[in-house]
Structure formats: C-alpha cells, structure tokens
Length: 293
Image (cartoon, rainbow, N blue to C red; front, top):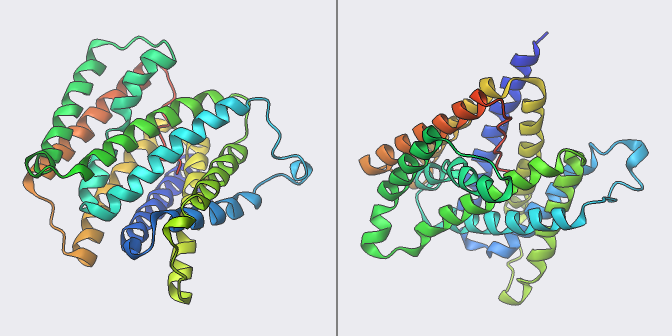
C-alpha cells in the first residue's frame, strides 16, 4: 500500500508523462488545422471530466456563483493553449518546454497586481535570472526574426493568470467544474475556425487527436490529485522531467538536438523557478502553477 507522499509522487509523474505525450501529438498534428486539434482537446477533455462529477451534482454540476472569474480564467487559458499549440508546431520541443518553465516568473510579477502580494529581493533576483535564461534560449529567434519564439512567452503570460484565477476559484469551486468550463470554452473556440477548413482524419489520426483531449484532461486531474495527496515541496520538482522527455522525443521523432544555448537558458529558467518555489514555501504559500490545459 502506497503512502500519501508516494501516491502524490506517482500522480505527478504520470501527469508529466501525459502532458509530454500530449505535446508530442500536438507537434505531430501539424498537418491538421490548430482549430481542429483544439476541438478534440475540448471535446474529449470534457468527456474525462464527466466521469468524476459526483452523482448528486450531475444535474446541476454547471452552476456557479462566480461566472465572471470563470470567464476570465477561460480567456487566459485559451490564449495560453493556442500559443503553446502554435509554438509546439514551429519550434524544437525542448525549446518550447524550456521557455514554458518560466511561468512562475510571470506569476510572481502578476501577483503584485492581481493579489497585492509583496515580492522580496530573492524573488526579484529569480525573475531577472529567469528572463536572462529566456533571452538566451530565444536568441536564435531574435537573430533570424523568428516570431514563433514569442508564443511560449505568451503561453507563460496566459498560464500565469490562469494560476492566479484558479487560486481564487479553488476556494469555492470544485476542480471538475473549473476543468469543465475550460474544456467547453476550447470546443466553442474551435467552431470559429471551421471557415479555415478542417481535414477529416483517418482512424489512426482520429485516435491520436482524441488522445490530445483525453491526455490533457487526465493530466490536469492527476496533477490536482498529486497536490491533494502529497506535500507540494515534494512533488513540484518532478515537473522538470518534462524537459528530459522533450529532449528524448524531439531527438527520436524529429532528430532535434538542443543547442548549448538552449540548455544553458533552460538551466537558468529552472534555477529561477526553483528559487521562486523555495521562497513560496518559506512564506508558507501553496505553489500550484499547473499547466491546466
């Protein structure tokens, strides 16, 4: 029988695995319109949520007293997920994942404005270190005017507000309701892309596209379970395994080899987020900057 901390570790690990495979499929799906992939993410993401809604809530599960905050969370989440999908299709996998680790940096800055938090010297140092890391990773984009390097940064901005919104919503809203509204909003957004043309997938592609939604939905639920069962300080560092998976998948499927600059920049970004993470623990705050996509 596993202990609570062991369960938390396991849930975090399979969550990172699910997100990594989802990223792999999104990058593979470059022949399909982004809107079509979003449709499968939204539809099958909702299907996974229906299995965890309590029976007594099934007829009224959609009711909420905080519709505006849900709306803001969904808008920020939509910006983030579209940005990360575009980035995954146009940049090396390890590059996208490396920059995405910078989300705590932006959350630290945004918490000043949205949560009225005070940021101390150590966290400001971490922010500067993190931005230096982003600049090092993105340097090829600056030199060749590759606009796609901006999309992982947009993802970080969106995800940062999502983290703040979920922190507020979690005080009154169950995780399945937060996840449902987001998946539903993804599906609605996808319908606006029909005019750009969709491609009817064959059975294998249909399965893979469906897995984007299933893996995304399950990954978020497993992530939440991880924080429920275990100390945040124990399981959060495991998320950096995503970079290892990105390097392995990128090399196997696309022969992508991370540059020295990418690895140095990724190291600085990871160090930065770890400093912020440790300061959050020191100030007794719960850290849960999850992808939630």
